Image 1 (cartoon, rainbow, N blue to C red):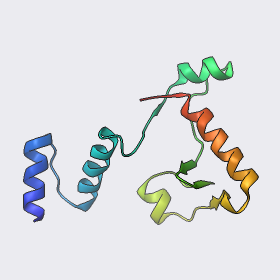
Image 2: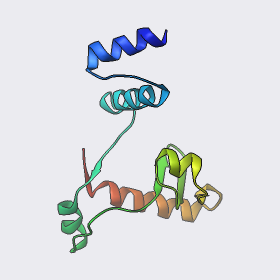
Image 3: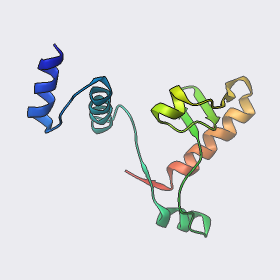
Amino acid sequence: MADEARQHFRGARGFSVVDLADLRAVLAMDAIERGIIRFRIFDSDRAEEKLGRRPPMLHAKLFVGGDKALSGSANFSINGLHRNLEFMNDADAWPELATARRAAAEKYWDMGRD
């Protein structure tokens, strides 16, 4: 089955799938393209319009989806989520904090582009 999947993505998408990490990346990209995962890139120009200054990057670690609002030090990466010693806060235990986190996420979302 792994060889069939590898051949499918190589032929259909032009990707070489060597291991499970590659397959996960391809599946994530597919989910983004199909609208299952909404994804935006930080845009310094939009941030400047909204904030009146031009931050070089968005470094916030704020993950919002469904009924969850998480924040902490972890980057959304293999190291940040699985290997490093990081802190992540589940704000749902404090409804006011969860609301504030969601509002911040919407503000950051508006500073991005599809």
